[in-house]
Length: 462
Image (cartoon, rainbow, N blue to C red; front, side, top):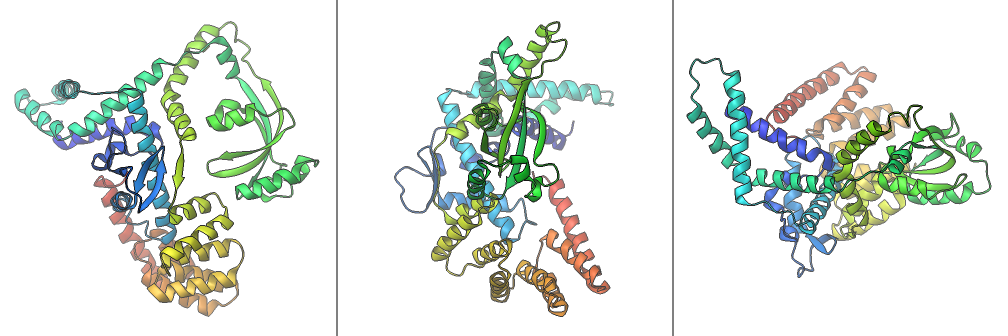
């Protein structure tokens, strides 16, 4: 096996170990991660420049910006203001996850010695040598030389391998605590029949919850686009298909109750129509086999459930208005988003990205006049391609085709490497029969696509 292939093998091991963490990137940022507590996330004595706090550990602005800039390099094509805003939130959430994980490791007293790492390196070397022997077509395989090359490569990966071992030990410890009973198995077959209405924000969900009292829920659901067709009927669903916090919420509801559920960043007002225990017909006959299979499934999800529970109980505070605004926008709470953007503008006067974000909020609220003014202001202030594009869409909607086309042309000129906007511009130019402009966009898209493949192929993208 070549050294480059070995690198990929090691990285693959790490990715397999970390996928279950749903976004944690502790294995890839050892320079900023401390397994002993606060580390470089901020000492407890620093009061200024903190953007947030997690279970008493402060996240300082300077360290956040270092990590954010590091992550930005992996996504050179996510250059639009809204992409950057959401990337900031993703980076913050990843740091939160890292801190919670480091505290869990400390609490569980997980330790890995240099001897453990050395044994692991030797194990990897032995495995790869045996594999290389089987794959080698050469009459004489230079095992000594190959072992030396492997060790040289793995020695460079010591920090990463140590983190993998720590993760593995934590996983094994959490899995060892999994014990299931026949009652647990039976409960896993519980199903619920729900009706739900999807709304844009927590505030809207609270208002709808009050409105739903004393009304026929199915009739009410048909008044909303998301549930108009079938009155919000979600049919029968296994309760274990939901995240742990949603499971607990549903379990606390009685038949006929209406409550608010949050799934994947969206809010639902849901009514529990009915519940049942849907055991297989051969349950008693295959009970032992089913119990063993269920225990294996619980072990597979044990670490994910463990970390999910830790995060749900964590004391997470956000101070930075940019992050607050991104969080509000993500949940569809435009009133809060506006409030936080205004706070941000007091700190970052006339910041074009914040003004752009405010314009998008106005547009989502249907306040097109206010949105258009802000887009125009940003576009002319910093020649932001995305702002020109949004100007064009509003002008086109108002029947001002000539002005819209001019805005799209400027958007093409100033958009930069934002491939999604270029795709949208290509469609616009095709719609208006502007073949030359369409061809130009196709050329830009092809160049960006080639660059994107090169970056991903080079290992700089997740």
